[in-house]
Image (cartoon, rainbow, N blue to C red; front, side, top):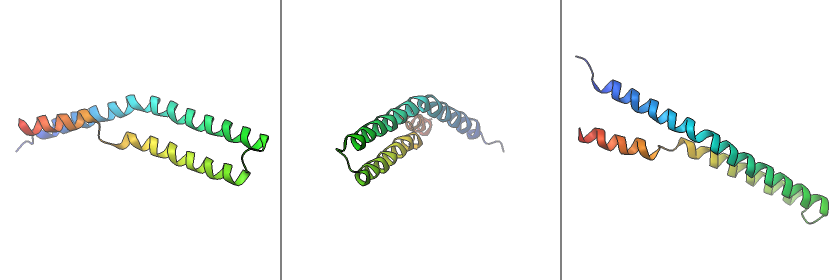
Length: 91
């Protein structure tokens, strides 16, 4: 017996992959801005003596975690995929 749901699942996975691919460049730009602004701010603070080196390193590590969490947003199920899944159940 032929499973007629496989082509629908494959199309849904391709659509989801395309949505992630479209969102990736914007996410990369956001992450670059976060990283560059953090490094510039921390370096200027260290050079002017307003931020201690240990505190600067801690803040930098926290900014790395922010960048990682921002990138992980791409792994969430896109809203359109959830909506399409609901429509598929109705059919």
